[in-house]
Length: 193
Image (tube, rainbow, N blue to C red; front, side, top):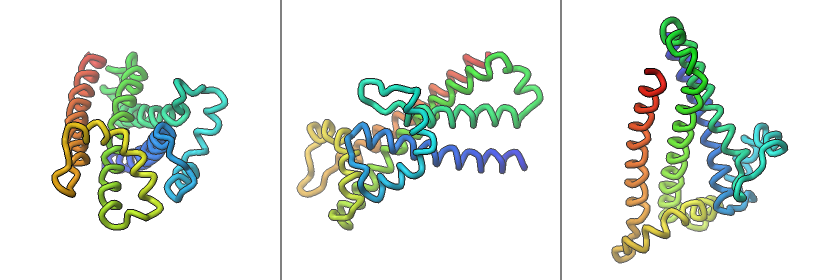
């Protein structure tokens, strides 16, 4: 019981910070200004890891890899801690491939959280557009979702004043999440076999 509580709390913290690192990456990738309440919060929560990493990890193709690596490593550490807390046969059976397994599963989990970042941004953009389109949050979330929605809007035209592209995007992201779950199961079976 204590192990489950510890893993729940560690998972909540790791997922929160991974989410923030991936929001920072998405904002940078979409060229969203950090001079807004969302951007300032994200920078304040992630600078402790991103700033030092930028000294040793170069950007790749103009993308801020220093924001991706901490999200991946946090998820990998969570997998390692989970395996160590299970102890006994689980650790001794997988001791050779434990690090490899943690890195692979950590990467898949970081991608999963990245998909949730997009889903939350889509939902936030929809709500902000209905409630207060002039909110300080409106511009950043619209800029973050625009690259995802634009191709869908070419295929799915609006029905009158209703834009169905966010719904289609969320459905497609849910399918990707299902595929990631299958991939995670396959990776676990292959690495632990």
